[in-house]
Image 1 (cartoon, rainbow, N blue to C red):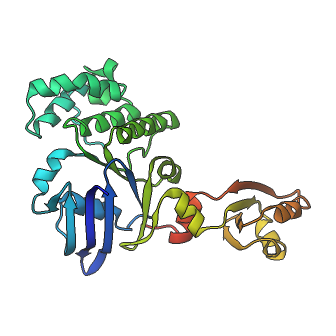
Image 2 (image 1 turned 45 degrees about the horizontal axis):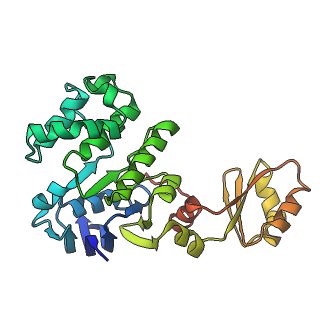
Image 3 (image 1 turned 90 degrees about the horizontal axis):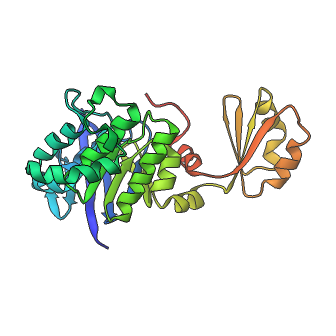
Length: 304
């Protein structure tokens, strides 16, 4: 396999706490690799380590064949970054943001100008070329940030929660563009809190919690290996009482969250027949998904 990123036994300590605790990763060319986890799991610190923005306290990293952080500056010439929060220059137009950013990579203005039509078309911003950033919608700004990360035609793109705050139309357009990048052989490293996004885009995933990788594999493998295949969600004030008296007879595993009961099963028909006798309850029957896996592995409690 052609590894683009290799990390072995990475450790990062802050204030005596192992924020990253011995993780290992191998990411291959042309794949979208997802890094999932609750807030504080160590995802952003891991990205910063892989980019060479901070030095590890243990372990070894290679990015595009370069040792990190020793040759991080050289490696980053072939890397694009989409940060969690847009940091576009509000005083510049769309085209000027791309032009100025390209100069950071030592590119000639003529070479950047030659790339502008492709980048603007990719971001669906050709008609906004001479518009300043404050006049753009949130979705346009996010697409511009993605286009900016591609100015240097990178081999690897790091995306930290790229669709947070976007409406469904903007999210779907971003997804389409990211799939186009992997089809062109680009390697994506993605963090997201949207499990449907990870399930749609990622070839492989690693779930992190407390600085460690607790499960890793394709979305389909994670679902098949970690959770029952069927889910029945039961809603209503009486759902908890119903679950105590009836659900256990037909369900492999039950989780209660507020007024919702999640029943995880191998075979749902017996439970669905039982629910027909309780018209006061509402329910939804669906296949298990990546969000179910995530909540099982990391818990349903809020992380601050």
